[in-house]
Image (cartoon, rainbow, N blue to C red; front, side):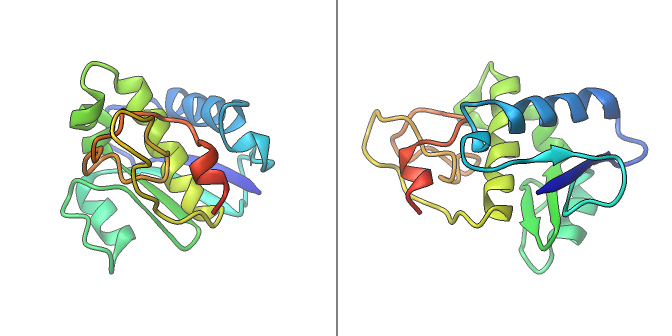
Amino acid sequence: MTYRVEVEQGLPFNTADVARLVEETLSDQRGWATRHTLVRVDGHADLRIVLATPETADELCAPLDTGGRLSCRNGDDVVLNAWRWQFGADGYTGDLRAYRRYVINHETGHALGYPHVGCPGPGRLAPVMLQQTKGLAGCRPNPWPSRVDLVH
């Protein structure tokens, strides 16, 4: 699957830096690269990964109600909410880079056909397809796919 990375104009994030983190995350052997070939391209791609303002994210994610705070996958778009990109989520306090890797992996996981899953048990690592932005349900934060994710 090919993908391209975009950053909405006017956001205070460097497109090259965002693209580098996306590419590092999606090619990391701890992630989807163990089962899927994901290749970054500059032109036409199967998937567009876009860092967008909360307003644009709401538009691109519709009809899903993201409330200006959530990211999504909608069709061929993986939409990363810039507010979350900047501030992360409670479970990832102090580790913004790990949260960013999580949201990249989670939303790309949807594009690869993986559904949401629950926490496998208190104190266990959260599956990447757990909606960790909304809470950890007793699990520990984890930005990488696990066996729980890969069996679905």
